[in-house]
Amino acid sequence: MGGTSELPGDEAASRLRRANSFGSEAAAYAEHRPDYARDAILWALEPLAGVEGLEVVDLGAGTGKLTDGVAATGARVTAVEPDAGMRAEFERRHPELPILAGSAEHIPLPNDSVHAVVVGQAFHWFDQAAALPEIARVLRPGGVLAAFWNVQDTTVEWVAELHRLSRSTMLVAQSTGEFDSVHPLFEPFLRRDFPHVQRRTADSLAATIGTHSHTLVAPPEERAEILERITAYLRRRPETCLGEFDLPLRTMVIRSLVR
Image (tube, rainbow, N blue to C red; front, side, top):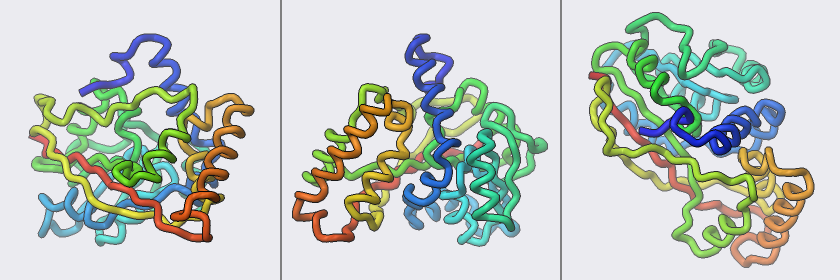
């Protein structure tokens, strides 16, 4: 599996800047980013069915988008997040849940302490050479690692065009990993995709795209031009011009068991 440590210098620096771009926009991230398909969460935790007192870490938890869905299954969730701005927004929205300062490479928990580690929209930012052994360290025997991504369903024609119009000069492809790669500490990853939607308007979908890392770090003039272009496009499409509409998404999950 890939990681930022394997990238050329300029690309690694760009990805690091994007990875660190969210904290200043934490409130917008919390308001506009989608949740995760419930069926995707249930599939991720399926190997742990029947375990009582399920303990889960949401790693790179951000403002708690995935935490909400995992907690709704009855699991006890501890969030771990490196960015102070994201942690503050998480605490504001989830005062009843614990959140710890930490990262995938330095998880502030004891060995063999949790049944599952879940990751929402963040696995591609990890230095996987350091993160995977650290995740294995905190997992109990037979524990689950599951990473989630919400992606636009570009098999829908108007969504494919939206995706094209949303691109910026700061966009660097972010791999979600080579799923057939084998790590000595984990079983081979399985992958499933689940249909999902987010209820949006032209303005709120533009705001959602405005929370994507490549638009956050784009020059202000380019960022403004992208968001104006997206809004204009959505206001003239028949699928999106009449107020609220469903944005077709897929929640993609990869899942493995610690050896």
